[in-house]
Image 1 (cartoon, rainbow, N blue to C red):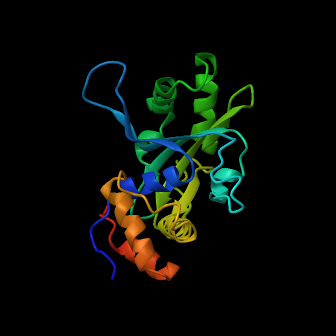
Image 2 (cartoon, rainbow, N blue to C red):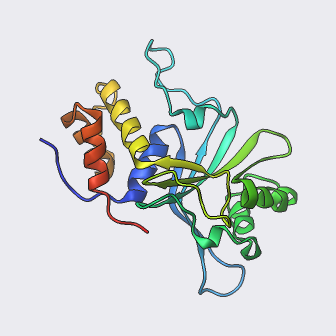
Length: 218
């Protein structure tokens, strides 16, 4: 029998990145250069290294989602999480606010001399690569459907749906039940995702359960 409990969308998204070999910080906040009223935050900040491998010599290595594996660079990911359609908050679509510049400086993955060029690319394409070619930064938007953004939003942001996330998590836990059995140190969201992956043999049922129990997030 499945266990029903409302799921924090940001926490579920964090597990999607974590299961794909990313180091994550949920709700990464960058404060303004002056004053204390306004702030900028990324729902999930993630970093994934290019040589990531798990169970590589077991004969059944874990296969990460292709959205990550198709890029062979160190990836810095800035993720926006919604339960409705995929969209970006205005704070990330207005170049005049220079929020990408603040975020990039806070993360520290790129030389300060490259920040403006990289930020400009993020505003127009949703991704950028360092001058040495070794590191890229990508904007992810998670939501219920991969609709095209408004004209003012970036056209190149990676859109990932909750169905895609549910299918990946279910497949990962079902394919590696033995290796993923020890979950005592996981948080409550991870434990619940794992438990119901065991309970639901059918991926579509698992996906329906996950989506139905997401707390609304605009």
